[in-house]
Image (tube, rainbow, N blue to C red; front, side, top):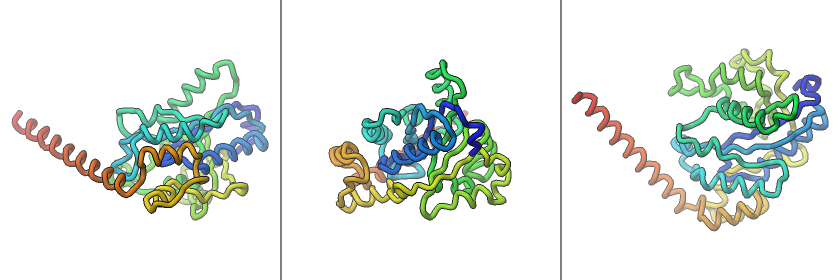
Length: 269
């Protein structure tokens, strides 16, 4: 990341994801990125935003807790921070799954309005290295055959920039320099890959859900308020996960029935 260009910028960081549940790792990512920006790039970090995905992502992720729970847990997780907060715009949208670029555009506008008295405002996408590895993933349901739109990736790097926190098993640097992402090679000055040596990136939401399902403690992996919320709402237990699957199957069946009715009406017309 070009420190000379960024110097003096007022930065807002945004982290998109499931937060299912949020962990201390998510919070540490913000702190590590803030240190990097302020110490090495001479920026001023104004805000950190956690943006949970909507429930429409559930078709790809059956274990996804309803957004009302994930947003509340994210709010609880950030309640002790004076600069990181959870935002519900993305997860509360009714239009369906929102592409990352659209989330960035919305929050960029919010930032410009909120800090209209400041100069050199910059919204930067924060992510784990495993997200970068998904940039080359194929998606047969997409018209382009790719999970990520080439144009979207170009805009994200050009207009916003990317701070990546290293994660064991991920290969962000190799992925970004691969032939498949050649169209991004000239934009890598807008990317920073940071190693987290104070608090290595090992905790994952998936591991926490597995632990809860097995009846094991997750205390000190996420704030106590989040642990208590999970217990109080009986989230991620075997019974809860089975109910989630049942609800998903029921919803899918209702959609098929509704689509068939629509098709029949079209034929009759």
